[in-house]
Length: 275
Image (cartoon, rainbow, N blue to C red; front, side, top):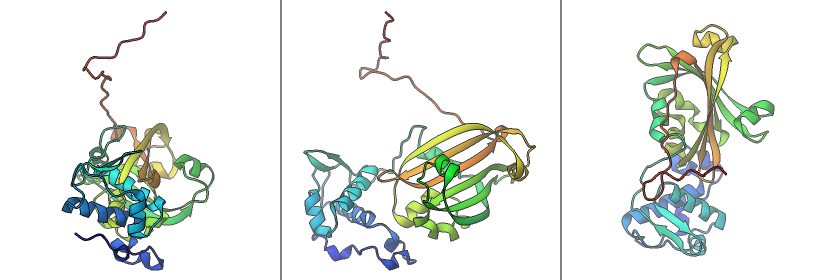
């Protein structure tokens, strides 16, 4: 395969919001996709080093920042590793699709959207300020597409949670598709924009349900509940989505398995003796 011509990577311009998903993708995502295709084709074999940052800058006519984002994107899907003073080494010919986080796996998060449907009650674009910005962990003044709805179980239509979902306004074009899909919203973002989910933070608080939330969830006011806040981060630890889910306690449980750390020889670490 000949070296990629720079003009093959179209700059993100005013028409980047067109209906062509590839043209909506960030520039670094398109560069990463080109490199991934070359790796799969064998132009950069497993064990070899990718061209240097400077060489990639020159080849694609982009800044070092864009190149580093593209490399990070490849790292996040397991194609390469990068070490200072060594370079970017190809580790696999194809993306592993593996995802890990502090809870268990992306399969668990994906399963959350399986067997349920999101009944959308309303959408709008909002600018976050004050306590809501603080709760979400976003800078005040940042714009999001907000989706409000109730998740219902397919088999009996029972409301499982009240959902308030915030999606980075850069991805607001997914709004029309959300009611028709049975997958997680972050998967829609990945599919249409080429982003890669690399990290999820989850926070669980004990609360009570009141007002309109109680009516929508068909429970009495004051019912104990769990509020589950999930923050979804893409390459560069950019917040692309956040969800606030309010679950009546009797309709939701969360479990996780924790194993004791072991040493490299398989033995448990020694406890420090008290003096």
